[in-house]
Amino acid sequence: MPELRTYRSKRDRERTPEPVPDHDDVPDGPGNRFVIQEHHARALHWDFRLERDGVLVSWAVPKNLPIDPKTNHLAVHTEDHPLEYLDFAGDIPHGEYGGGDVSIWDRGTYECEKWNDREVMVVLAGSRVSGRYVLFKTGSRDRDWMVHRMDPPPDGWLPMPAHIAPMLAAPTSSLPRDDAEWGYEFKWDGVRAVVYVDGGRARAMSRNDRDITRSYPELRELAAAIGSRQVVLDGELVAFDADGRPSFALLQSRMHVAEPAAVRRAAAGVPVTYLVFDLLHLDGRSLLDLPYTQRREALAELSLSGESWRTTPWFAGHGDAVLAASKEQQLEGLVMKRLTSTYVPGARSKTWLKLKNLRTQEVVIGGWSPGEGRRAGGIGALLLGIPAADGRLGYVGQVGTGFTEAMLRDLRSDLDPIAAQDSPFDPPVPGPDARDARWVRPELVGEVVFTQWTRDGRLRQSSWRGLRPDRPVEEVRRES
Image 1 (cartoon, helix red, strand yellow):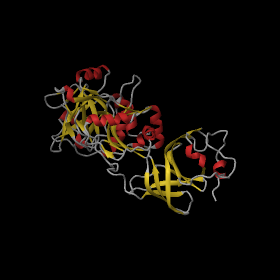
Image 2 (tube, helix red, strand yellow; image 1 turned 60 degrees about the vertical axis):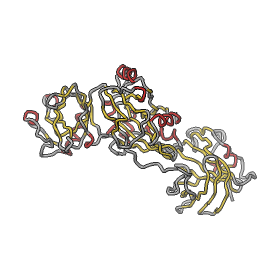
Image 3 (cartoon, one colour; image 1 turned 30 degrees about the vertical axis):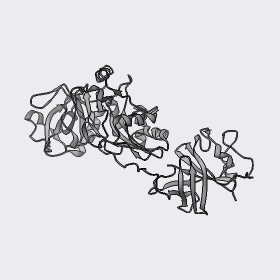
Image 4 (cartoon, one colour; image 1 turned 180 degrees about the vertical axis):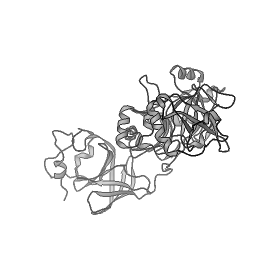
């Protein structure tokens, strides 16, 4: 027999806008209505409610009803709700049971095919969701249920890909001559991240296919804002300094952190913003083969803007003006994308170009030399290399400036575990630079800023910018 005592015991009508009936008497209704409410409580979820015997039998579904019959979703059976909840939307005050914003995501009618204590099979007819679903009990507790879609997915629907390697830009030293055929974006000094959002949950992958989700909790709010939509975004995680400019040095303190308490401290001290510049998958549809302009239009329609995320601007043509603006704002440079370009995962295509205001170079650390004076006993300089086409690590010089004390401590803790007996460089490092060198396995990528290349292939007046754990060693190449 349905009852609302449990529902009433968890709510006070003086504190919540939810309907709270005085007694268990239930009104008559048609008996075949359903509602799905998006509930931004402590954790985002969707409340799925079926009218039955004068009440709404309810399940909390953390990732909403599945579209793919190959995927089952958790459905937590909760207390029955009054029929008045079919129309409820509003803000439940924080501190109250289920505190948070509630909105109606979909509603309609259903046909019941089976209903017992362990299985409920229905055919839904809503404006956003339709088809045959079954809810089934999975354990001894009344709350342990799952939901499964029995019908095939909608025509043309594609599951969200598990991995899309980011497309890369080829370096150039000048603006394109056919200016009107290109779109121009600012180059952000951060960490590239492809973010997968499904069921209001985010998963972030770096350029070298590392899961970095735990390091950037800011993405949880982005995913919650996107809600039930299924998207794959491409963008850059950036830390801004006090003047509002991207700071790679500040970002360093966020790049190695994964332990939850340390992440919370780091996020409080150095917040990051996810700058989104491409949309690769949207609600069961791949956008990879669409031209850049259409992907940008679809991205703009998502209206992504929040405290720690936003869509970046882009400009059709007028590259000289955009380049001048990037220099005036002291940004890293430009990324230029041909307006007709499709998204080719993992490719470094000449339909995407990058033009830097600063001369930077990714390098592989092959060793270090001991310091003197204040740095005695620690790192004085790093010995740097760039892999050749045949895989040999070619020596390109030392860097001994640009370090903070924290950077030096972190570098030492990263380098000690990969210490090696022999030099990884081929040909060998010249005698003076090799004196007292401590060799390491060539596994860590960093970045330097420098003035020019010398005739013998060395970096001139280089200064350390930081480690690049998002960069694979095998992709490091000499920039022109």
